[in-house]
Length: 176
Image (tube, rainbow, N blue to C red; front, side):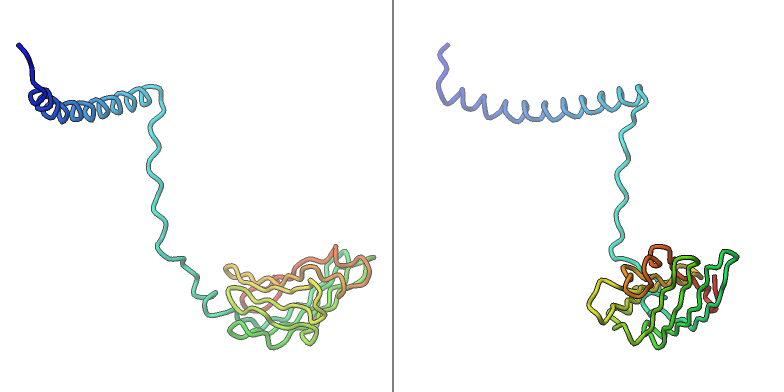
């Protein structure tokens, strides 16, 4: 029997969906076999990652701005001493005067008049008016409030800044 082009095209059109459908089933079967083998080897497929939150959640305290009326006067047995007074209301620094004495190294002194405030939330930032890299940052984590000078060698006697630690307050305003 002689086939015509029309009958060959008809057979191809009918057979194509069957062939494609068979491939999809074959792919599914192969995927199931592959997952089963992984499971037998102790390698279950990783669960899908959790979906990220739709918006970042900022703690209410950070959104409202830092508030602190702190006075920390402390001296360690080694002679390391800090005398820091700071007042911050809703992220706005009202007063800042700090002196840190490091035994056999010198001292550091920070006064609000030497800084300009550049940030209020989520942390407070004061930058030196001298346009140097000196900055003082203040932030709260739980009941601990940290006052941390960075790159402020100019506010210290020679070599003292490398030994100065950040000052920490409790939520009531005392030394931590």
